[in-house]
Image (tube, rainbow, N blue to C red):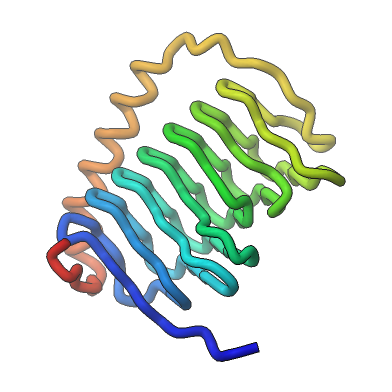
Length: 177
């Protein structure tokens, strides 16, 4: 296997800490916030992260497939989660210490609960508004109630992080995209 070539495209409005581990072909969109100690590995194919995402500490995002891993806009990856799925829509939450296998594709407005292990035997697509919860990764539909309030809260969270992270961490500079 040939060595992985590093190519990072970081939008000038993104906040990416210096001690983030990046490997491979990675594109980070406008307004995305990557906390210190996060890991993003594009092993086989590139990773494209949309705008307004929040990637917290100890999060691991890995692309083991040759196809492009697309992560949509306004997604939240909480502390210690591991994500390997090839496509993630918009406005999703992957909660703390949860794991999502590379055979899963996540649509929009989905929530993966705390500590859930989503490892289906064959390829699976989580429909819009799917909530995965509990130790056996049960699924149910979310009605969408409170969606607007959640988005407002997430925007305030991002605004706070954009202000506070640069005060206490060194940042990687974007290339002015």
